[in-house]
Image (cartoon, rainbow, N blue to C red; front, side, top):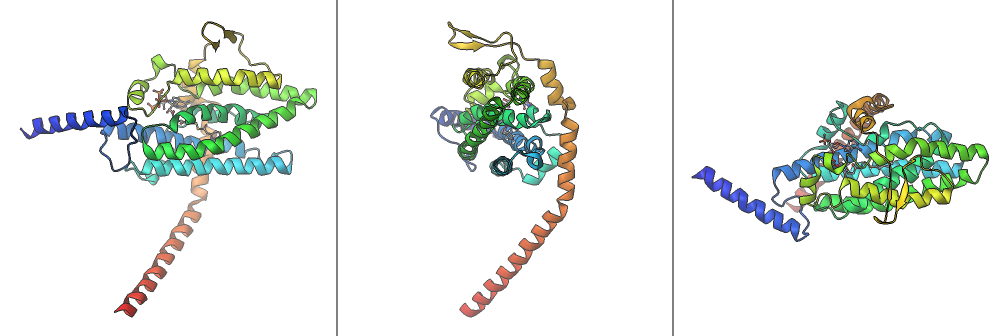
Length: 329
Ligand code: FAQ
């Protein structure tokens, strides 16, 4: 009887939960949710947070070599924003009952995924333009959808993040606009950056819908509101005219407008390359992990100092509260 009772209760809870999702209600941290919903969110939000943090590395590489004070200031601000995005997202993940330290340890141990895109090198200054234009552009496409995701804390984090990502995308596009209006050599640099970043940017949206193991359930729970392929198509449609304004050639012989579909057709992604990068064998996977592990080890003294300071403040606060209590008594 108890087992049967539990099954009925779960079925009722599941039904009520799905009805809330279907009514477009936000699910909040203290609400009942199926464990698989919770685990899916922890997986996606933590991968997203790790991506923001590892994503600081390719651009951080160019802070000391930015070509002007204005460019340097903007790039520093952008990289700082990415750190902030990581923090909002780790906080959102924590509302699901996992602590931040566990998530850090998963990344440090190389067990956690982060976006494939950050395993490619930034070889020239034009790459910083391409990262802003294409990588942030692809990120926004996905994140605008996530402002309407069903889990409240994730949706609210996304609203803030999207505002900042728009600035990131524009600063990247402006870098490229400046380069293409410069010398032949600068224009060639911009084209070379587009050649190298185009396909990895399309891969950011994940495997094709038919291969995407999580999509069906995530769409039913409205965690994802558009599929990987829908978002990828939306990105291609929005980006091709921007490349035309830049006078740059997208490196895809199959790219052409399809009047019937009202969308651009584009070539096949090299999925072997995608999975190889996801499984740790991209051009910079080892370098990125080593940089993150080093930063974590070298930052140990900062964490210890911050903890000591917090404890000291707490002690002082307790002393003060004690005094007040005595006075009241
Ligand atoms: N890289 O079944 P699906 C940014 C994995 S933020 C690595 O389709 P799902 C800002 C996937 O995790 C960029 N792994 O999975 C910035 C799953 O593995 P699992 C990050 C990938 O979750 C800009 C497996 O493949 N954005 O760039 C990738 O339904 C500039 C099967 O895939 C987000 O994380 C990939 N590209 O859909 C920062 C957005 N794609 O967990 C600095 C939130 C798939 O079973 C500088 N995330 N995989 O081991 C999402 O929307 C989704 O998680 C998707 C994947 C769309 C990424």
